[in-house]
Amino acid sequence: MSFGKAVVQLASAAIGGGIGGSFVVVGVNLQFRRQSEAACRALLLEVQSNYEALAEMIKVPSGDPWPNGKAHPGWLHRSVWDTQLSYVVPLLDRRTLELVVRAYATLDSIPDMKLANVAHPGVPYAHGGWINERISTAYEAFRPARDYLGDLVVNQSRWTRLLPKWVIRVAARARRACGG
Image 1: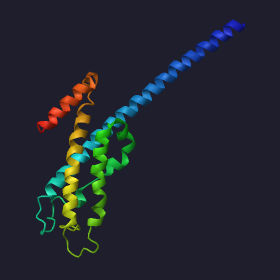
Image 2 (image 1 turned 180 degrees about the vertical axis):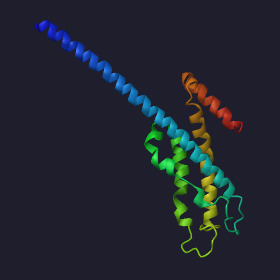
Image 3 (image 1 turned 135 degrees about the vertical axis):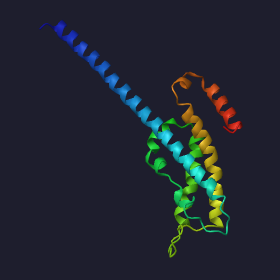
Image 4 (image 1 turned 90 degrees about the horizontal axis):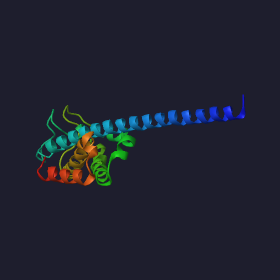
């Protein structure tokens, strides 16, 4: 085998390896993007669920116990946020990330709301006073998180990626202003 043939074969192998490797890298990046988009959709469902539960909780009069079968602090969840964080964060813009972090931070006091010794068959969470304040704060924090995250998830569709970012921002602002 001549030296020239060996160089050509080596160069061909290197080029082929580079092309094949780039397909693998692109495939992995596309898969991560799909997983991230799915995690954002799941997070939006969790945020919406928490917001709706908080909306029901603020309707319960302060002196009354939590009604059985209705929303109470035990209905608030953070499992998607905790488990999918590494997939969600790369897709969130700074403002949306701040709002979602702030909303979930309001749930840190939920374990403190649980009654220590529950002798009755009712809901094992206290109600009134500081708890009502925390629930109201959480409700107010989850509203913008829901809105901004909803806009982000809607804008992940294939065709909207072709639009300039300023058009998407204006449309999102208009949708929030109209209450949609």
